[in-house]
Length: 175
Image 1: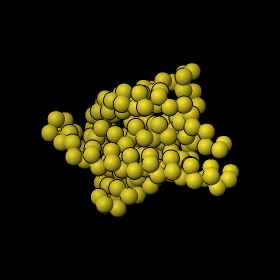
Image 2: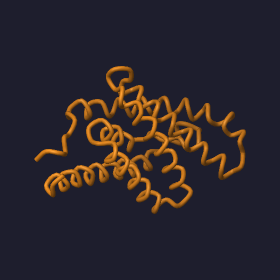
Image 3: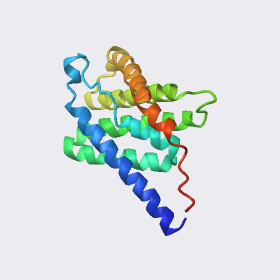
Image 4: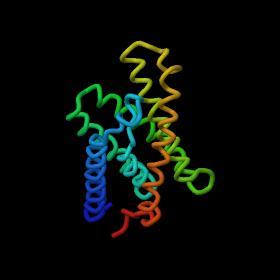
């Protein structure tokens, strides 16, 4: 890869990271807790960027954007928030990355997004069980999170669809 392609790739990643950070911050301003009485439920707006990067860039780009977003937001919100965000995000990324291979054949954008939201919730629940030492949380709280994750994953897919369908896969290997 030459310098021009590296610069182009870095520029795409930087713009998408900035967008993911903006969406993560905007999401914190939405008073979702007033509507849904399930602590920890979020819309997952920044996952729009992760879905886009997975489908239109390289998986490495999506992973870098995800990790940097979690680290930057976590440096503002604190180490516990960072753990929840990073573990949930990595779990979601792993599942979505596996399903993207079959995108259009076996899995739609909706299926990939909902599966990612479910994996995110399982990752976060694992952190909660570890931190609190309460394994019963899995049986009592996880079903509520999975239901909320299905809704948020659906909304994320609906929001991501027009953007993803507008852009073809970006080939960052040619000038």
